[in-house]
Amino acid sequence: MTATLRIASCQLNPVVGDIWGNEAMIETGYARAKSDGADIAIFPELMIIGYPPEDLVLRPTVIEDCRRACQRLAAKTVDGPTILLTTPWRMDDKLYNAALWLEEGEIKHVRLKHHLPNYGVFDEARVFSRGPLPDPIVFKGVTIGLPICEDLWQPGVADYLGDQGAEIMLSPNGSPWRRTAHAERTAALGEKVFNEGLPLVYVNQIGGQDELVFDGSSWSMAADGTIVQSLKSFVEDYDVADWKKIDGTWTCVTAKIETHLSGLEADWRACCLGLGDYVNKNGFKQIILGLSGGIDSAICAAIAADALGPDRVWCVMMPSEYTSSDSLEDAKLCAEALEVRYDIIAIAPARDAFADMLAPLFDGLQADTTEENIQSRVRGLTLMALSNKFGPMLVTTGNKSEMAVGYATIYGDMAGGFNPIKDLYKTEVFDLCNWRNDHRPEDLLGGNSPIPQRIITKPPSAELREDQKDSDSLPDYPVLDDILMGLIEQELPVEAIVARGHSRDDVMRIQRLVYIAEYKRRQAPPGVKIGTKNFGRDRRYPITNRYRDRFDD
Image 1 (cartoon, helix red, strand yellow):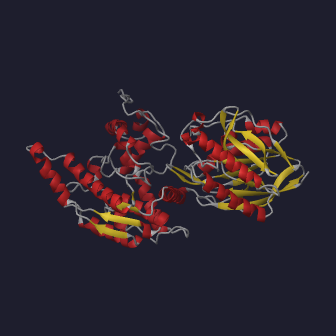
Image 2 (cartoon, one colour):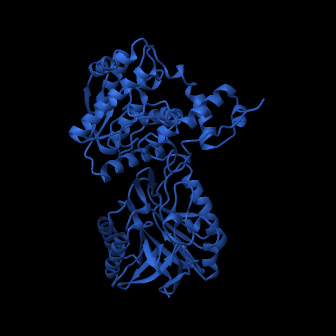
Image 3 (cartoon, one colour):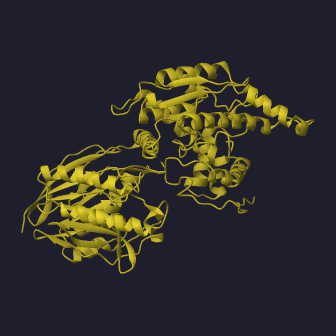
């Protein structure tokens, strides 16, 4: 029986569906672990297929290709080290999320995921069958538990492993980022570690996958709940930890400790990683966006420059007679600070052509939001034409406050492929712009202070009519956002939100706007999940829906 273990944590960024590319990534990580003299190399959850694979795993050919890839990887382990990975795995005509222990050239052990998350962004119960409580395996005389992600969030698996004599747990994970992630992970998993006295090596995926961002932030925990190893956040990382059995307990004696990111920097990096991976993994060479001189388009341009580099960002200002001179100047200054391509295309000719075309039907009617929306749709059409002709992906720039109440034009400023700030309320956009102007992390690709201060301080406006301000039709954003936080993130009754000091009429009106804008949100592009209740995977309200909270005096 060995008294030491060298365990390599390989925190990697797979691409969903790229079985052969992910296999090559595993081979590279494995080679590094081998050269470092590791006994075991651990990879994130479903690393072979990428997480979450959703209904992709219902294709029989996918499952067979995953099985063959695992067999090829197993063949590389003849002389060690051992590989721990998870994969879709078919047994007895059922499909499982399975941990494979690849040792001595073969798939030596298979352990099945017991708890299948079926809440929030997760729907594993849709595609996988639940496995039995997973027995530990024995490696070099050491009894090891192999819980997979959710198995450690729910009761049952950790205490079962402890009862079966496990001495340490090795856990592949696919845990997406949200602001509460670190606290939730250390609390939920630390409780199992502390209660059972079983040290834990936790290896998490990193990267963007559609709306989800995985932050990595892998770590190891001693039997008393102390963090003894931590890998970086929002980047690929790797570390080999030395474990030694001391007084009957496995103890980490050598490992690196990185600072796990939180707060505004974590939000910014999540937006950058989500946008960057969406663009890169889908094969786009460049992005394009409308740069209006407002704060939302400015922050999206800055995120894109940080994620992709300025040479891959194309900004277009599309003024009308309602565009202020300040906006024209601010957009130009922002593009210059970012060092991105910048063009100006006036929309008056197209807008006037629509006005002439519709004049016989609109004759005698007052101008209203119809004419305002035509301007937005002309801009969307212009950007999509540039996207079609030259190939860049169009980025949309609506924040969560606007998306919540429908303050956006369908087929206009909502047209595009991805939205990096879709889950950021307007007040959070302001905070992040100020943070980015004050900070420039070394590994991001943009420059210093990319957002002109006047963009942050001037009153927000869509500039679709004379002297328009967002506050003409919406409460001030600090008020609006607090109401929306109560309605969306906290699911509070309207009485409770009014009790926080808000106008009853404001709360009832905003509630109505949130519900009737559902059809718009269903047609919006995906965007990075930042908080606990994003539109899309987290919050799935019906479009046809007459329910409203009542407020009886």
